[in-house]
Length: 328
Length: 90
Ligand SMILES: [Fe+2]
Ligand SMILES: [Fe+2]
Ligand SMILES: [Fe+2]
Image (cartoon, rainbow over all chains, first blue to last red):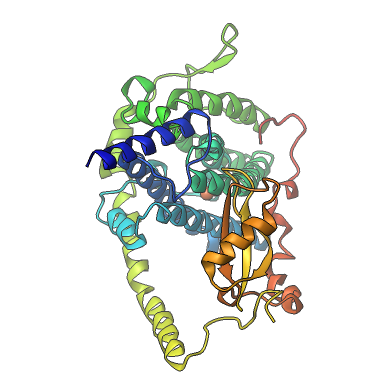
């Protein structure tokens, strides 16, 4: 009994040291239950966001204005699906099960980023999403590359590399529209008007009101506060909008010489709370679509499983036959 | 005697990387041998050994066809998009 208690104390001390020395925690290391639970919640919700995020953009694949834009959008949406898979796999290293994570999403026990509950109404929205939403995601994700949990940090390195293409293609769409006809420029402005505030909400509630933050800081899961990250995004995006010749929809927006930052007007946190609670423009539609696709695809998963079972019964190996280089 | 592939994690935080292979009577011994063969100079902080026969690999010969779908998609790279010089932070 005393021995077990000692062992636990040693394991805890090793974990604390590791965090303190800024080393990564790996799947087989001992970790506190709360650390594991916090990571499973955060990583799975991040994964859900990537996957649900495919919907607003996916709805424009068949309506893209040219074959080139269609190929680009297809590649972008495919990347988001890939990001979801990197992240579900990282959560699985903590013992989470894929089915349980998906059930939690579909039953509304797990959240995803509230931004994806807004509709993509015009082609310019595809530009605004890539430019603003993916930029905000990058600002959030860059510090996560140094998150204390190794598999999550490494997934973020891959993801950030791919996100830079997303952001650029979005800005490229905005630039093309902003330099186009008056109607195209108006469409770009309208998209910026609708996406600006919801994008600022992506960073989460203001620091003064944010829950579960301090423990995440202590565990080095989180390294910057919501307000710090939001400010970083604003400082980047405002000059980018100027280059586009578009106006940020905020009459209070002002450059503050003393702090070297842009200051913004008040964010409508009631709207944020409503959308998070399930009452955004598309919440029901997003989950209904996810459920339908999961059901429609069930036969594929069953067929693959049946094929693998049959191959096992025949004693054959499934997939590509081939041994690694040295195996002769 | 079965062949094992050896993977070394050079430092905490990095992923395991393939270092080479060796023959051993079983996985436990493979781990011992791998330590002697591949990590005599503090090359790593963690070792994995995997039976080579458990690895399914793509065929080098088929690589052009296998990876072909990625070749004609330069638009997947950020550098494909020209930006005005004055844009910062993208
Ligand atoms: Fe993504
Ligand atoms: Fe993301
Ligand atoms: Fe993205």
